[in-house]
Image 1: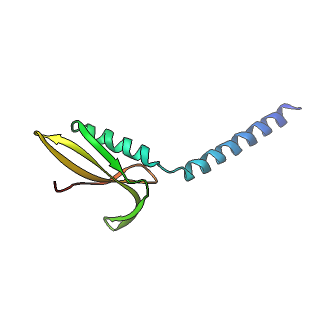
Image 2 (image 1 turned 90 degrees about the vertical axis):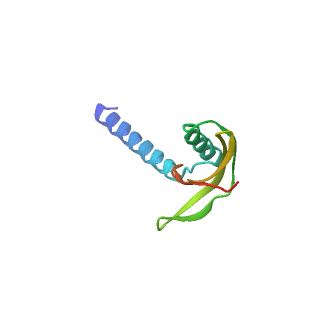
Image 3 (image 1 turned 60 degrees about the horizontal axis):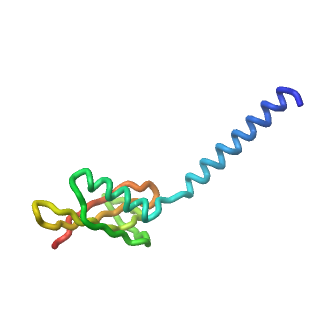
Length: 105
């Protein structure tokens, strides 16, 4: 096999692998477990948390005129000796926290 054919086959293989990788990343969504882990890490930056939960089924929410497919979850934090609860929404596609709302105790 000549060098030209080897380079052509290697280039073709690289291109096919790159396209397959891009397609797989497009279809991978954030799991509820990973969404909860990311949200807990974000809340821990402001102090310790004592509990957390997440719904496993995504739901559609509207935020700032945009529709998102998101997981809903919550955390409990101890602030000044009092337990405070926060509800959050995590985008299924990106894993970004869309919204965080303190809930009534």
